Image 1 (cartoon, rainbow, N blue to C red):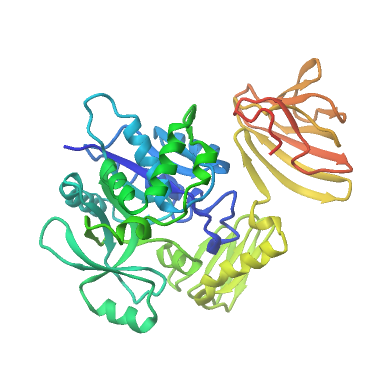
Image 2: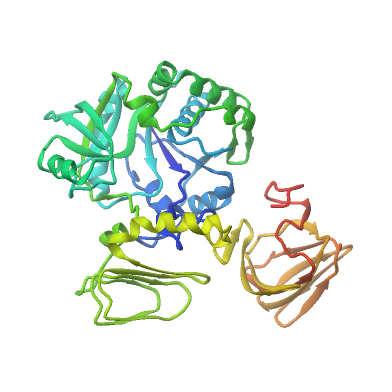
Length: 478
């Protein structure tokens, strides 16, 4: 029985779910539907399958690497995390994964079957999903490129479709791929039994995919091969050669391979799938009260129906609202008619035109050592709350344009200040002059919370020189 190698594509930004999803902390890293994040749910989807590889390959943005690694460690998943130097769409991402899987084969081992899954989809029925994967294994092992067609539940105009001739067993033959249709054609296809949503989930041998990529997109394959050949390994991170990868054309796996190959096949999938592509879609898959309201956080309503209301930091109240979405975050508030939630992407585009930082970062920013939360800021000063996890340590660093005052409000911290090292506990503080070499460490069992007051003419996060760093960031200022 062939080994199945899970490959999770975690490069999306989820702009339609702003303000919860942002460029530096996108939707796949959030627990939008259950207690676990969408990435964690995806990684656990095949738990218990006999022929599963010992680790998972994840392809992600370098900026997300520590969050991805931490979330997989939390659920006990071993992973190879491939860091894309730049986003080049799904076909190059899968090529990097396939090349890595083949490079890491031991002598005598056959190329694995790659099960390619986006990190940000919901599948409610994991057993049915595993059964569909099993249904496609024989065809994939024989060299076919298998994709999973979602049995449609509505006339949706936001998805591409697959036209397929269904077979009683095994895979079905694909007649055509259909672009996102207008409503008239979506209704027509819904009435037919031969059209399926294209969810971007695939199963194929690593070598079969690379063979087809070489036929139909040879420049892409060549660039990816050169990039992996020059890759460096940093703990769990695989860093493809950036210069070689940036020469790679950008294209989706559908356009680059699936719509051109003669080896495509399909398995129908009816397992409660959703791409959670908008607040409206998230409302559909969320638990709701008797009035159809999906409420999260400190929310109190009266006379509301069919709403999605989420609060992350304060009391949110609503009266007489119907079919609306209200999402509160520490620094932003979104109010949108539920049937217009697809347009949030255009709203984010407008915010980006004005260089609003709220599209990139949450107020609470996560780092490999913990997080910081911007509490207040005006010209010449800003106040942050730092949370340093047990066993974590910040980089040994200095600043050219700001001084810092630290007060411990919870826990205990070990401070390095030039040639001194000392501990601070609750209600104790220290001062870090401009240019002083300093570091915070937490060798203790509980998180330490520190209120940091920065004073200076420039307070940007890039005013930092890292002299030493446990997370491979020496010499960087981001």
